[in-house]
Image (spheres, rainbow, N blue to C red):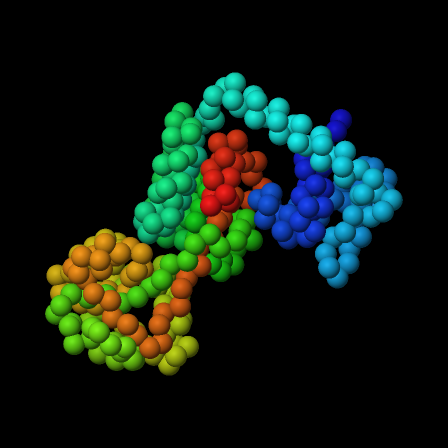
Length: 295
C-alpha cells in the first residue's frame, strides 16, 4: 500500500531543500522528516537525496526521476480534498487555541474572525494562560495550537517560527509626569513602585534576565497575574507598570497612560507557534494554521 505521508515529506524536503524547513512546513519534528525520507528510500530501494553543505538536493538517479510525478499526484490529491471540502461546505469539530490575553487580542483576533466566518461549524475554544501553562496543555493533549514566548526548551512539543513580537515597556499615569518626555536611565526605575507580572511567567523572567544582564535589579512592589488589572492600577497612580505596549495601545492613544522611554529599552519578545508532538492534526486545525501562515 502506498504511504502518501512519505511522499508528502519527500516533496516538502525537495521544495524546501532542508530537513529543518520541511519540518516547519509540515508541523512535525526534524527527526520525523529524516525518518520518513529514509523509509521511502528503503521502500523504493534507492537514494532520493544527496546531502550537501547547501542542504538536501535531489539525486540524479532517484529523486529527480520521481519528483515531477509526485508533484502532479499531490496536486491532484489536493484538488480532490478541496472539492470534497467544498461539497461538505465546511470543516467541523473543535480547535483549542492556547495563548495569552495580549496575543489573543492583538494577533489572533483577526484570524479568529476570518476563520469563524469561513468555518462556522467549528467550535473554537480559546484558553488564556502563560507560556508555561500553554506548554502543559499541549503536552497533556488539552490544546491543539499554542502561542508561547521563545525560546522554549521542551522537546515534548513542536515549535515553529516567530509569528509576532511583543514590546514590553513602562507606562504610568500623570502622577509620574517627571519621567515623561525624555529618555530615563533604566536603573532609575529601581527607585519607583513597579507593577510586574508574577515571577513564574516567561514574560517576567525575560525582563528580569535582561535587567540583570545590565547590572540592574528590578523589584516590583506589586506582582499580578492579570495584565488588565495591572493597567488599571497604573491608571490609578498605584505604580509604574511593566507591560506589553500592544496591550495598552488604546490607553496610550487616549492619554490615560503615558510611556516612559528608557535606556536601554527592553528587548522585544518573540512569540512562536507550538503544537503537540507526534499528534495527527485535524483538517480544522490545519486550516487555522494555514490562515496563520498566509499572514
